[in-house]
Amino acid sequence: MDAQQSSSIFPRPFVAPRTVMIRPLLLKPQWMNGLTERLLVSHYVNNYGGALRRLNAIRAHLATFDWARTPVFEINGLKREELIAASSVILHEVYFESLGGSGDNPPDALAEPPAELARALERDFGSVQAWRAEFTGIAKALAGGSGWVILAWSERLGRLVNQWAADHAHELPGAVPILALDMYEHAYHLDFGAKASAYVDQVMANLNWQRIGARYRQATGERADEDELFRPYGAPAQGDARISAEELKAALAGDSDRRPVLLDLCLPRDLPRRTDMLAGAVMHAPAALPRWVEELPRGRPIAVYCICGFQVSGTAVTELRRRGYDARALAGGITAWHAIGGATVPLDTSTYEEKRSIAPP
Ligand SMILES: [Fe+2]
Image (tube, rainbow, N blue to C red; front, top):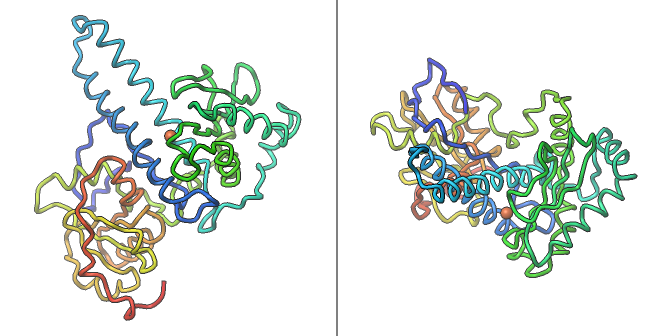
């Protein structure tokens, strides 16, 4: 994820070079328009995370193949599964990154594409409304089945296309996905039952057009420096102030004397959203930092996490680093940890500061 600075006391965790690393949620799952946190987090952890775990397991297994001696049915079977898993990972990332509000705000249901993308949609579909009608029409036609609808940029065709896909690995060659709409039942059943049409309309009211526009610019080779759009809001900007879930997992499996100290931070209002924690973590209220910071050992790396890795862990890590601690924020929080299959233990709030004695967030 990032280069280790020579001054850091964080161990250099060994993450296998073939590992495809998880991407954090950029949307705030508790603040979406008509899509519940339960649905979005289940989808991210179980389906996106599941595809990512499967992909990494397949790639590790493929690396052991003796290609001249492996039976062709094993090669065919595993390469097919690898393609399906990799395509699922990539499309889920486009899907989740296309949703959510801006900064700390919920999505604006009335938001429209940025001017440049709106002009491209107008050029290729007649109008933004015509594009939307076609895109949602294709999605609703997939109701009862499964698949994806993908707005993609095709360099060969010289235009944006709405692509129909019956499964994860069904793509127009060379086309770059700009926006992907997941029409597998797992994407909506928890909230909408069989009402796939209502789900499609709700997704369209949760789009983050800034990020979709940025992806269009990247696809057409006009990439601007827009990295902050694809970083969770409030996460530290510097790479060495963040740690990926895979790196943390490797670091925790290392020498016990160099293992990071784990801090679990949670706003009082978010306590009901929590059920578990990383083994060995100590839970605190962010507002009580001046008190609990005194208990932190100097000379030990510190990994801080919150639910999704937004400003709760980001703000604390910035403050801890200002005070001279080698602290890093877990990218994607405990949600990303769950998605890579990281182990947890039941939540222990015995170290959490009394709600009445801390300032409101
Ligand atoms: Fe999905």
